[in-house]
Length: 214
Ligand SMILES: NC(=O)c1ccc[n+]([C@@H]2O[C@H](COP(=O)([O-])OP(=O)(O)OC[C@H]3O[C@@H](n4cnc5c(N)ncnc54)[C@H](OP(=O)(O)O)[C@@H]3O)[C@@H](O)[C@H]2O)c1
Image (tube, rainbow, N blue to C red):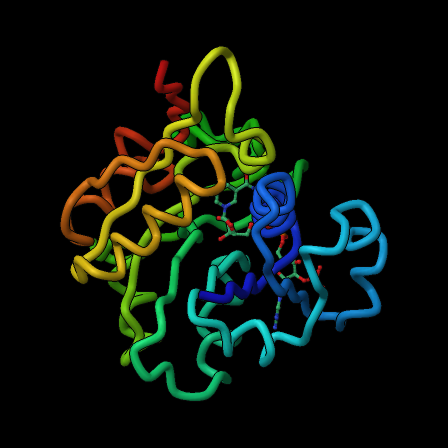
C-alpha cells in the first residue's frame, strides 16, 4: 500500500515525521510544488518523497491535511477515487487574526490557538468531506490531537492513542494497520457519523484530548 499526504504544514509534516521515524514510505505535497519541500525532505530522509498533489492523490491511502477553507477546492480538482482510501485529518476551523474580535471571544475555546469553528449549519465536518470525495473509502483520523505531538508515536512510557472512524470496515482495518506500523495505538470510534463528531475539534468531547496507552 503506498501513501500520499496532501498538505505539508503542521499536520501533514508531522504525520510524515511519524512515518519517517517508522520507515514507512509516503509522498507528500503542498500548494507550491515539490521543490519547496526540499528542506522537509532533507530532514525526514529517503522514505518520504515530495510530489505534486496529483501524485500524492494517486496513492492507495491518501491523507488529507489541508486547511478547511481549501478542502473543497483541493479535493474537488482531483481525479476519481475509484475505491482508494481517503483519510480525512481536517477540522472545520478557520484561522483568525490576533487583533480581530474573534480572538477575544470568550465562547471560542480555540481563541488561544488563533482559530475558531466554522459554522456548518448542524452538519459534522467529515460528512461534508465524505461528499466531496465520493467513490473513495473514507476514514477520519489524525485530526483530534495537536499535530505537534504526532511526530512521536511512542512517548511517556506508552503509545499515543489515535482515534479513527468510518463506515468501511476493510478501510478502517487498513488504516489501523498503518497507525500501528507507525507506533500509534488506534482506537475505533465506530461509524463516521458517531466517531467524526466525537473526535473533531473544537467541540467534540475527544477533540484535543491526547491519550497514552500504557
Ligand atoms: N495544526 C494542528 O495542530 C492540527 C491538528 C489536527 C488537525 N488539523 C487540521 O489539519 C488541516 C491542516 O492544518 P495545518 O495546521 O497543517 O495547516 P497549515 O500548517 O496551514 O498547512 C496547510 C497545508 O496545506 C497545503 N495546501 C494548500 N493547498 C494545497 C494543495 N492544492 N495541494 C497540496 N497542499 C495544499 C499548504 O501548502 P503551502 O504550504 O504550499 O501553502 C500547507 O502545506 C486543517 O484542516 C486543520 O484543522 C490541524
